[in-house]
Structure formats: structure tokens, C-alpha cells
Length: 324
Ligand code: CP
Ligand code: NVA
Image 1 (spheres, protein in one colour):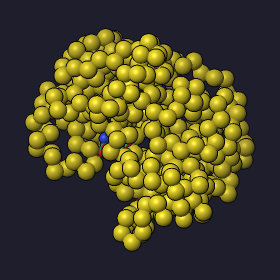
Image 2 (tube, helix red, strand yellow; image 1 turned 90 degrees about the horizontal axis):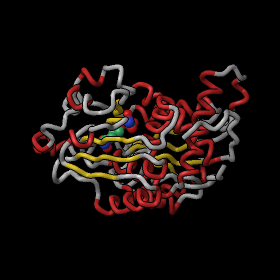
Image 3 (cartoon, rainbow, N blue to C red; image 1 turned 30 degrees about the vertical axis):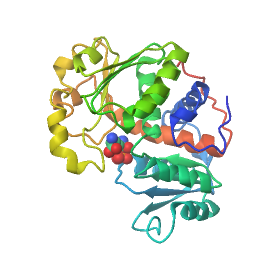
Image 4 (cartoon, rainbow, N blue to C red; image 1 turned 180 degrees about the vertical axis):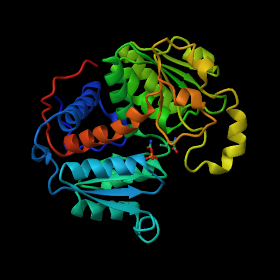
């Protein structure tokens, strides 16, 4: 396996297919051994004595709680810090804050308003910096999504993901990883809400290298046609609240409903990173047997655990490598 010790996880763009698979394998291994296995819990004190600074400039339920509980389970300790607790950005620079925190803690996990803040933290920090979401990316979410799909389908290679909705941080992270794992991408966004054009070029490059397709459309039906996975997210991300009226108007016709799902393959599944609002997906689809949203949410814990473990130590999974 490829060692990723000491690395920052600011975007999956920086990670190879083998490194992404290593995170997923470790997550599957830890889930199997800890949740489903019968091994002594002491075996898993992999992060005993380690501390993580968890900085949140935006709200969070899943990212915070999955990280805190994952770290606690492995014997570590987390310090939860909002921008009301820290001097960050008020009386201290991001750089200085990160430099100081890295003297106390073994890693920094940060949910920030700007990706640039993460980059500044990584530059200043002597310990790994992990993105807990920015306006550009959400890498931890996509690791959980891929673990969920791996568990469900028994493999990822050759599958087609249809994205229906905003060209946002979640989509960008899917774009940085999916082609590397042999996953085709169909992206439907309203006009004016396409993914970032630079990241699109990067993703097209990955697609070319790996022989996968990447299609953009303004028609959700076209994107969902014969897809294995339909994914959406809120149309109004954190920080975009004042655009709500305009966005609701622009996204008309983009709600994932049963009719749209029926265009996908019969065995297709539905994913949503949560939190969910009713406008982007009907209750019927959200609560259907095709929906893997709760498994996806739980997998946030096993994947963030894998990231912490792999960035802090070389970890040798004992569970056989899943088929990717
Ligand atoms: N999906 C996700 O990151 O959720 P939170 O905003 O609750 O962390
Ligand atoms: N796109 C959403 C994801 C939340 C987990 C946001 O940035 O608010």
C-alpha cells in the first residue's frame, strides 16, 4: 500500500487512485474489525494519546460528530473550536493559528469558508491538515460515498454516477476522484451553475487518463439515463442563503423524483451527503429502498477514521482488499 503519513488532505485531486483505494480499504477494514468483528477494543487504540484540533467556521452535524467519535474510539482526543472560540481571523492570522495549533495537536481538521484558508493552514502546520469542507471541496464526504457504493455494488469500476443539481463542493470532489476509480460521470446542472471550469479541465484530464467518460448537460433526464447512481445535494449551500429565491427558480425541474430515478438502471441507488431539503429530492425517493443515505452518513465515521489513521501512521489492513 502507498504510505500517506504526514500528508495533508485538502482535496482528492492530490491523491492517486492507489492512495484513494488505500483510504477506502482501511475504512472497510476498520469497519469490519471494529463494528462487525469481535476483536478486543484495545487492539484499536491506534490513536492513543493523539489530539486533533477540529476547527469549524461553518455549521456541521456529521463531520464534527463522525470525527470526534472516530477519534475517541481509537483512544484519541479532539478539541472542537468554532471561530467564536479562536482568535482566528479576528486577532490572529490563519497562518499563526495553524502554526501554534500544530505544536499542540497531531492533526488539524478544518471546515472553512475559503479553500485558501486550508492552504494557509497546511503551509503553516507541521502536522497534517484535513479538509472538513470548503466552498470548493468536501473530500471526506466523497470517501464515504465511495465506501458506500463499494459495499453496495461490490465494486466501483465501470459504474456511472449521475449528478443532478448544483456545480458545488460535493460535485467538485466527486470530479477529482471518480475518474481515477474508473467511474463515469454524467453531470446535469442548470445553466450558470456548472462546476468550476478549471476543475472541469482537471477532471477531464483524469477521465482521459483513465478511459472514463465525463458528460455535461442541462437535462437531468439525460444525465440519469442508465446511471448506476444518482446523487444530489442542497441547491443552497452554506453561505448562499441570500441567493435562495434566485436559486429555487433556477433549479426548477432538477428535483430528483421517482420519474427521474426510473430512467436510471433498475438497480440504481440514490446518494445525498445531507443535510437534505425537500426541494432537491422527493420524500418518496429519499425514503425509498434505492436510497443509501443513512449508510452513507454512517460511513463518514469509518472513512474519517481511516484518514486519521493513515495520515498519522502506516496502517496495514488485515481485512482482504475489497474489489474496487
Ligand atoms: N455531509 C456533511 O458534511 O454534513 P455536516 O454538514 O453535518 O457535517
Ligand atoms: N454543499 C453543501 C454541503 C454540506 C455538507 C454546503 O456546502 O453547504
